[in-house]
Image 1 (cartoon, chains in turn brown, red):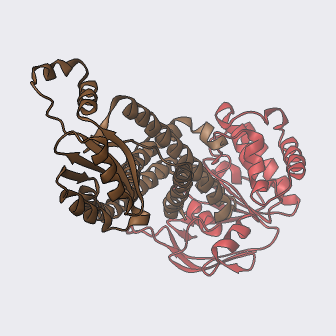
Image 2: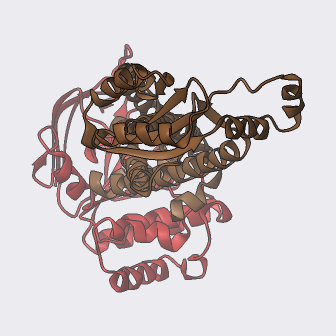
Image 3: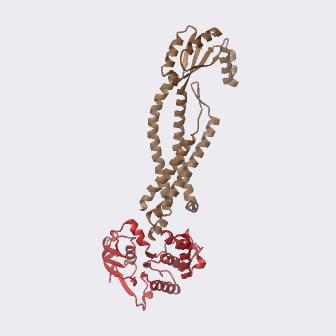
Length: 282
Length: 216
């Protein structure tokens, strides 16, 4: 820490550069974690909407419910009448709700919202259920999220592979930037290293403080990057509302385990960076 | 103590820095290496403390062949050789005490022992009142004495001094030379490289003269 204080400017520039390199890498991880988290979450419980041709009476709803409970893992969430659907739409439109005043009749269908547990029902359940319900004379259409989540999961597999390659490249780029940054700080103390060696210091005696310094630099750079990413996350969740289909997308921040892992990785990158940089002096 | 056999050193230019150097310095000797600028005095000293490797030939220091010495053993050997560099090579961000203590820190001396030995050495070189000063705050003569203090604080077997009076006035020159002689009396083998003819006037010490890389 003494050396960092002594060479404050060089280290500040170094930590700044490292933070930017880490920030790019961490931002990528945050995006990746969120996409993964979201598909996992959506995939576990599946939402299904059963749209009726006409406003059904309670007997019809009860009959449908009976039919649904035959299937494992089905939970009925709520019945949404035509009026409820219109109210909900008005709420969503807010100030623009006046646009709906011109409608002579309510075009929105009544629906029954249900959820299916993927663990209990199996992968084929939603399809079977949809087929069966659509045969009913009172049901118009059945929509469920899995249809496009399946497509999305296929895309996720591709994203995962691209992610590993891209993440790996970003990691190497960060390591390259960090190695060169540390090289600069070491270079600024080239004379000191030379003197230490000439008066009989062993390589370990000279190298270890630089390795500790590199690790501290890595830790500080990583911490600054995580803090900047957290600020960006706070701004994102307060200003951006993302929804895909009828499933809203809640951005989550990195879990404490991932944060710890990334900080540890920053230390390791700092350590590796300083070790590589020291190579040219020994 | 120091033996050089047919040592050549070529930095790649047409004229080698050292040519066919054969030299033996016995334990406890005081030797002046002299010659004009560019004669190879500094290169010779650098080869003895292994800051440079000879292009060919063998160098034995304290019984170790420097051509075959391992990195770890080299560090250990350097701890037994005190070097006073022409440009002092003091660490500007460490004060006088810390600069001198450096030679003991690398050996792993305990802190109380470091304090004791550094204070003793600084007193010996009349630097006690300067121990908190940083090198840029010191005069050339004071910096030279700090460099000597660092070189002798761990009682080396050999002391190499490269132009130790290079930029000093005649009074300081006499003072530094008196110090080197005193260190020699304490049993240290001393090699002093100098181009100053004044320094050699009337000396009874052995003088090795170099010219264009050869001993003449």
